[in-house]
Length: 125
Image (cartoon, rainbow, N blue to C red):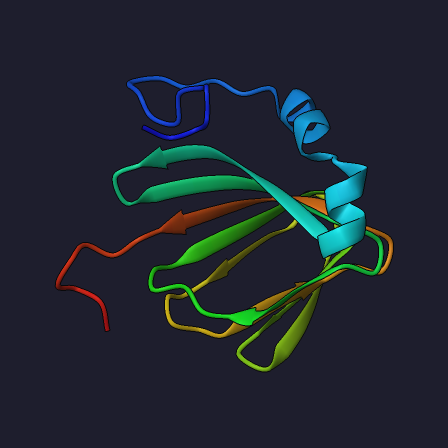
């Protein structure tokens, strides 16, 4: 069983993102890693994660098998995908297809909601 003591799946889940943000805003982890994350949903192929990036923080370039969406909640996020940098602000939504290399940086710090849809077994490219 997971060490997480809250449901990650179920017929209905409700979140107060401001409260989830407080749980994710760990100064020690942000200072050490430049980012922190809290998984909110892990149900079948769906993953929803709240990500906090520290001022000057980054997430190295990587790929996801399935498509992702990034919905910026606060701060500034610079999202590089397929060789293009996208300056994102609160309220912006960016969608990236599966297999596309992407990375994140933030000069002032920011928070975004990451949604990932994992492809079914046998359908990965």
